[in-house]
Image (cartoon, rainbow, N blue to C red):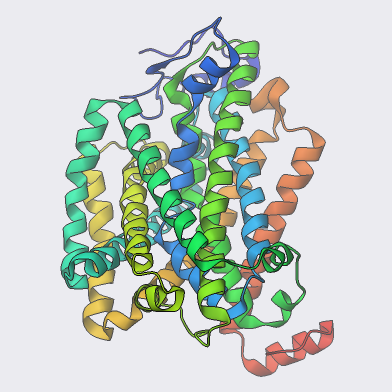
Length: 465
């Protein structure tokens, strides 16, 4: 389908020459949105992309960081999950605006705006983020396969290559089929955790207190490391590219009124999906806290260890099985969006297209090789460390995706009347500042010599632990 050139705002003249390159051309504007329908019928038409995005916020990488945070620090890091989720809701709203208003995804917008060396640099960073995310999916799915069927982790990693066939089949059936399978798997994960929370019986007062911020975060390096892992696992950099593209699968009216309506419904869709992701992430941490923190198992950080202890600690035989089923659904769900994100990033930054099966296979092999190496060389006990490290890598890429997103949606020449109002700009740049500051602090703590760190923290009045 050719894009509608007549209704592009005059402010976008600089981008008109690019607009013929639509994002995800095989599904671009393929889902009809009724013009004079009721609120709920339109809401149903726009529902779907938000849940594809939410998949990235509840993938196996979240499990490792949330389990470690809950077992080690109880409910204390729930406020980090909440803040991360609020950041995600804001940033995904900006992605919706960029895609709907300009007809460009974030990767294409970067290619339009920045010189080629910068574009290549941003592309490499984004590919690293996708590889880190896919690494978490590979390891998480392999662990679940091992727990359920007893297959060794190395072979479980290899088996995950087969999901290429599933992705291809779903894409050929239509984009609505992809969304339906994703939603079914999300509901499976939610049902498993709802049952486990019922078995664990966490303290309601303790959970509520966990949403209160704590200054201990800035004094405790281990807590900060896990918190940044949670941030990296919750706010996914490649999701910013993904959402700005898949929101364009809807055939909405390209007039200002039509775009305004599309932004409203797409934002409701993503916000509802991310609130469900908040429940999943919070449930993992609360389950770990309730089951392990006060039962003498504060050192539980590995998914396999948690699986073995859940049924004995909770006194319910099916608890461990539900845990593994949810993990497998989580890993397989995340693979469905990996192909789309990789395709969008490569096509957007480089204007270079690969067939989806080849792109998926390359992405999967990039993840499988380090996973198999670490498992084969260091042993299966290092898989959780691999998961947590992958989420910290993701967090390190966030600033490089958030900065251009805020810049583009804040420029009137690109957004016209849809440019960010002052309050959104302030919230957005504050979010970027928090993300970049926490990442710089983590890098400083990891790599700066101890005397320098002691001198710095003594100067600003924070103890070094």
